[in-house]
Length: 289
Image (tube, rainbow, N blue to C red; front, side, top):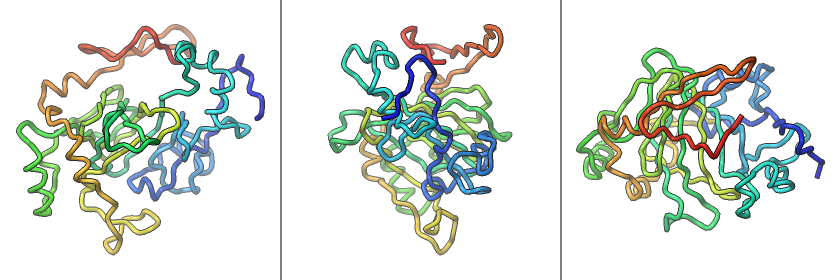
């Protein structure tokens, strides 16, 4: 393995985009932010980029240093330096998976199971996550949870009848700086025109599991392009219904998962962004720069 000095920051490679066939809803903002032909993101020049995995130990899409060393190897070589307290309890990797997501179109309605769900395979993990809104077009927003009174029978009836699930979903318009905590069991979808940073919690060495509830009736060709002659993406309705937390509904519940980031300059390029709101999910034991 190439030696990586633990006295210096880890510089990760920029080519972290996943294939457009995985993210046919993607846009061009990620490539533009990486500021190189094709964005330096690993995408084709001029192509769409729906997501880039900025910090990842996932076996399929691992982060690598500039000279190609997997991030997992760097952490494993010196866990005490990079992981601190986590290393003292025997961990050699981080559960953090950090993505950029650029939704030119709405994402599918999804849900994640909890860690320890009995249906998970040995190398699978739950995937609680959060969204920090970086940019949005006017009026854009997120779908989080169902409306009050919606249950399994209403969802099944709508799908069996070929109707849209949109009237059953809670929609919230967003502004840059909004922060949402998406716990396991919460139906959710990012709306078109929203660009977010998405931190997720995935057990190191495992794959986070996503169940796709519904995909707005869309069809795609094999390259991931919208096509009336294409095929719909795979759905996982029974699994999604099984793990749904039906209490994720209503204004009071939504207020408990939505927060607002403020900024306090420390001087130069340094700043602190505290998350305001009742029960803001900030721990004094963790500081990331």
